[in-house]
Image (tube, rainbow, N blue to C red):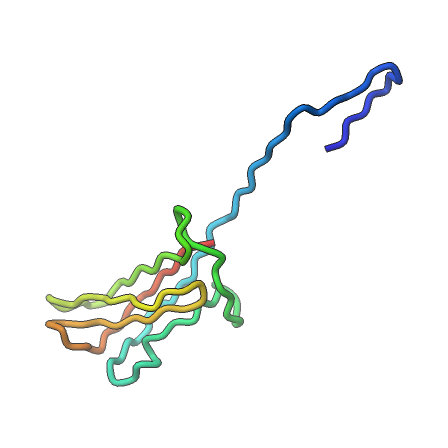
Length: 115
């Protein structure tokens, strides 16, 4: 902060100051991804910002969470399908779809939100 006056007899003092930084939300989209239980590596997602080809970790998640929020939408879900998200870190997560406790193949959209 710089204070100045055009009058040399005036001395400017700053007694308090604060500012707020707003970090915009980052959302990574993975659309129409096949989750195959026979190939575990296909259910691992390394976070890549939309419009980029280079993976990049998040700095954190919403509401002061240490990791981003991961939302799974199962396309054409069957009764009993449950999306399981595990091993969430700032740079990746694992996704599996189960039905009746058994891993099944499904197509999903994955939405990852953080900053």
